[in-house]
Amino acid sequence: MVNSAPTVTITGPASGGVYAPGDTIALTVLDGGYKPNVIPERAEAVLDCRLLPDTKPDVFIEQLRKIVDDPAIKIEIIQSPEPTAPSPTTNPLFVAMRRAASQVYPGIAVTESMTTGGTDSRFFRRHGVPAYGFFPVLVSKQLTATVHGVDERLPAEDLGKAVRVIYEALKTL
Image (tube, rainbow, N blue to C red; front, side):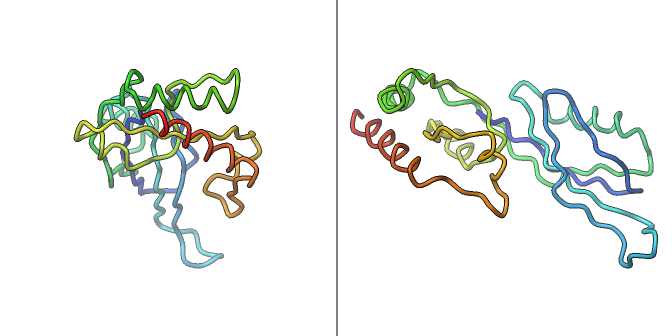
């Protein structure tokens, strides 16, 4: 259900962070200067922008330009995946995943959501194949903070439950 958003490059004088309510912007690359004692004449920042499904990428970029409000800063889209429709929650696969998760984790609610990560599911959805970012693990806030970090991990005891959920879901199809 992720509306894949553009990745943008901003070049110009070094500046502070940018925030757009509801959507996220993560500074993933910052480059400038070549010596510790020389102020760089230019800097480049690459921002990974994740937009909510109802946000139009072109409108978002225009808002970003207004927020930055500096003609010396160039904003360029370097990657902009095609948006795709979300997969249905009435699909037999989603229903099986919901049922299996409820069996392994009694009282848990399985709902559609938007993740901050990107997947290849948009390529399947573009061709009418439902795809879900199904991650049947209860993850603490502390563990979530390790995602894509040098200490990213999943406790082994949680892996067994995740395998059980997927097994139960597939068994009913």
